[in-house]
Every structure is written in C-alpha cells, then in structure tokens.
Image 1 (cartoon, rainbow, N blue to C red):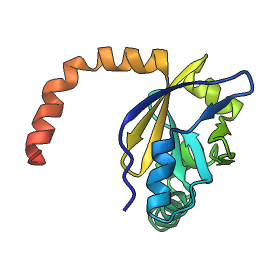
Image 2: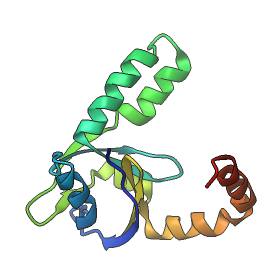
Image 3: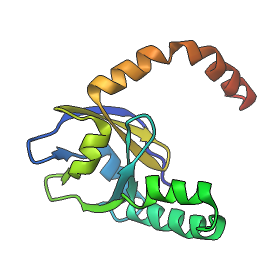
Length: 152
C-alpha cells in the first residue's frame, strides 16, 4: 500500500519546473511501482494534487462506476477534478513541469510545498499554505475531536 507523508519545500522555475521530493519517489520504488509517471490536477483550497499513475487509474475506474454524467453534481466534479488532469513525467533529475493552468489555480509564484497526503501528494504555493495553516487554527478542536473518534 502506498502512503505518502511529510512536508517538503522546493522552488519552481520560470518554465514551471520543480523537483519531486526523492522520498516520495523512493516510496513507489520500494513498492515496485512506476515512479516516473504521475497525474496532476486541481485540488481544493488552491492546492494541486499529484497522483501516481497506477493510483489515478484505480481512482478513474472507481469513479466511472460511482458517477453518472447525467447527474449535475457528478458533472461538476468531473469538470473540476478530472477534466483538467494531465499526465506528467518525472525526468532523471526528479523534475517535472506543473502545467500553467494549475500554476494559476494554485497561485504559485516561486516556492511550493509538497505534502504527503496518503495515496496522493498535495502541492501548495508556500504563501497560500502558510496562510491556510494560520487560518485553520480555529478548526483545531474539531480536528482533535475527529482524531479521538478514530482512536488516534
């Protein structure tokens, strides 16, 4: 089972290139999974989501069974999350290009934060991430209550 965790900070160049943390690539390699091919798409709260290709394919298979294009909410989800997705390839130096539409969605200027989020990776503008964390402190009591519910 693939589980990403940790927080890493990197820069992004003028071409939209950044490096995927080596520890994330290592997790896939230890599981004998493809560490070069990923899918990148929009996330919530100006985040960007990065999925290993195998997990993305499993997600699409699951969603194709659960969602109906006839349902307006399902169509909205597909348009927001699935349609803007693009496959990216990690080069030999561990770099990949974040597409321009996702850089704009994430309001990324120069520095990014990679967050291991179980079966996927979140990418945030460093500025937006810092703001999100500082504004989320009021939700801490809800988080603690949720952790208690999960016996963590």
